[in-house]
Image (tube, rainbow, N blue to C red; front, side, top):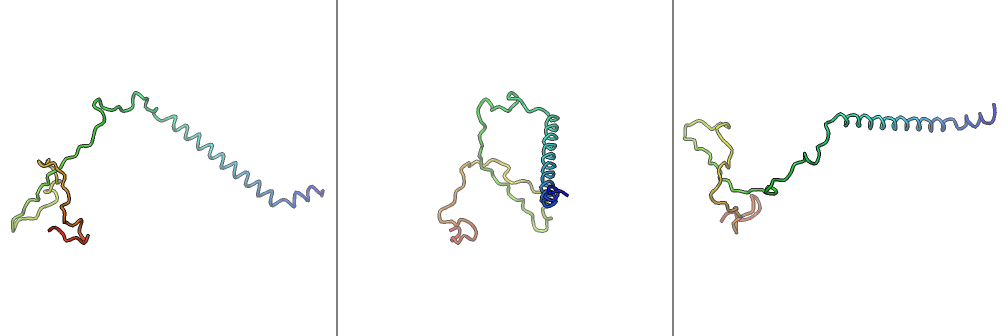
Length: 123
């Protein structure tokens, strides 16, 4: 055996590790390239993107603004004594009518902020 063979055998385990890492890197790089090409093929099969003329436009009057209104609550129907209880399908959504008074309700001075806040409550 020559000296070169001994050098190669002495460096053997390190060479195999480097070779395995290089081959693993080639496999990962190949998988990434394959994934990009598949993605490009899928994008080519999709419908084309809308042109600027097909984009939505603002109405002639400008942007539509939010409208606030106060709604009047519907009262719960009363059940007489001995009558049957109300079923869920007999109750409809609350706030179905526009209220005549459109002023926002504000907190009253001296009233509590919320349950358990420590205030004296409605006085």
